[in-house]
Length: 270
Ligand SMILES: N[C@@H](CCC(=O)N[C@@H](CS)C(=O)NCC(=O)O)C(=O)O
Image 1 (cartoon, protein in one colour):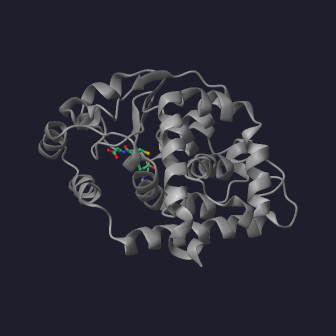
Image 2 (cartoon, rainbow, N blue to C red; image 1 turned 135 degrees about the vertical axis):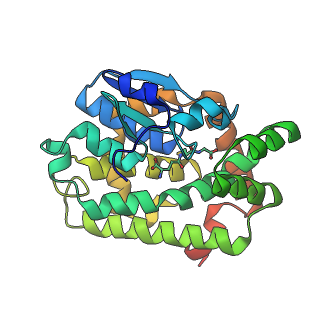
């Protein structure tokens, strides 16, 4: 979805670039990466997802679905990360020029599976909120889909749902690996593009879950190349909470030792 009409009219008066984001959200990482790659200055508005700040009326007046990121460019509001990165890069830029709309769409579609896997394979191992905060979120947030997702997470996702998310992710990673198998450096050729920006956080996130990237060696080498870019360090790693990253790593090891890690699901289990 492109530019939307803000509910909060004061957004129209904002000058320059404003980003509402969360340190470890993959969609926020995409936007910070493109800001780092283009060297653009922006005003940062952090939204603490662990404290459910996105359930506040003030934030839901900025982002109608109560999600991060939200982005304002001289009074124009954008709320989808794939739209935002295109807005920041601009249509005439090298970054946008060689980006494939199909790969951006695939990255956008991959978001729900990434979210499910993140909750199952990382967040489940980390203490998350009290009963009171769960109830307050259910009362205050207006996004019915997100509230149902949290209820499903609380009772436990059905195995078939996790299997399907893992299999779709495996399909997408194989598609990327296949593209890269002709020796190109980046997803759409030898030039780094928005397609690479869009996929960087996803590959990073599944890497945290212990995804077996040796299945897709071209994608694995791509990730090593990508991880050497300053934008990966400045816009992604530097924002990672070391305590959370350590807890995720410990939980991933625990699931692996129990044989219930991500490799036990969907097409990875075969
Ligand atoms: N399609 C949206 C998805 C936005 C989204 O799902 N954001 C996540 C973080 S990556 C969020 O706000 N999650 C809040 C929650 O799960 O409570 C985009 O690409 O910007």
